[in-house]
Length: 295
Image 1 (tube, helix red, strand yellow):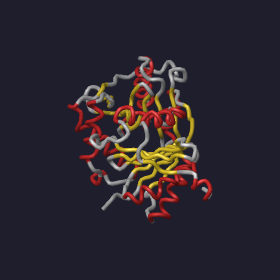
Image 2 (cartoon, one colour):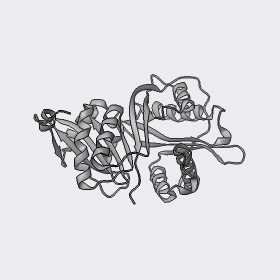
Image 3 (cartoon, rainbow, N blue to C red):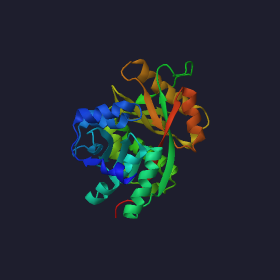
Image 4 (cartoon, rainbow, N blue to C red):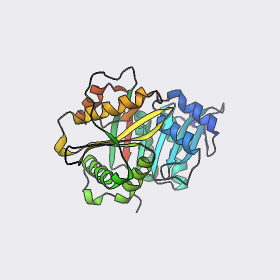
């Protein structure tokens, strides 16, 4: 970013809701998470753990050029119209002392931001991944996959969902299972269950869970699928493909949401194959980074 470009930009802590939504709807699929946060919780919501507040970048013509969502749980999500805009958030976030442990943005903007953030604070990610971003619509949904029995999880399943979530995180991030914050994931899963956004498949006849997934957000703007996990003893049997297809077909045929999106680790070939078999199409790339926890 040149000095001339920087001089024309300014940070704003207060952004009109309508202005923020208009900016995000320019790329509604990529921004479905942020659109949902604003639509459901407003621009500044400290009460709900999964919500938070927004910071914006405006140019000299008073046009919004970027948004940064500062989640109450330490998740930072950035959306900008040009990658260099992301760097404008580095100094204000550092100055206000907002510490985040999870960072998400589109790929190039994310790489630029993380590089500048390290120079400013000395803090570097423990994990830094490119994540392909996939989108599924009713039109792209593959027909003819065999359905599978799937249940919308209830509060009776919280213990199971918590353990599956912790196992998934431990495996994905190569952590010891016992080191995972179970209270954190129990709270997250409880919120999703109460909103009808968590789903399970079970083995017959013992009733033990074999597969889980949940929705980070779901609303008229679209849905974001996450938390997809198959237990080790049930992998390589086509279970994930059938389960994801069953859920997505049900959600899309209701006509309540226009699409379902997801992020996936670029190196997880099995997961990408399962999503593509259902009809998900690669649209762009995001950047996921995990930063050291605050001590």
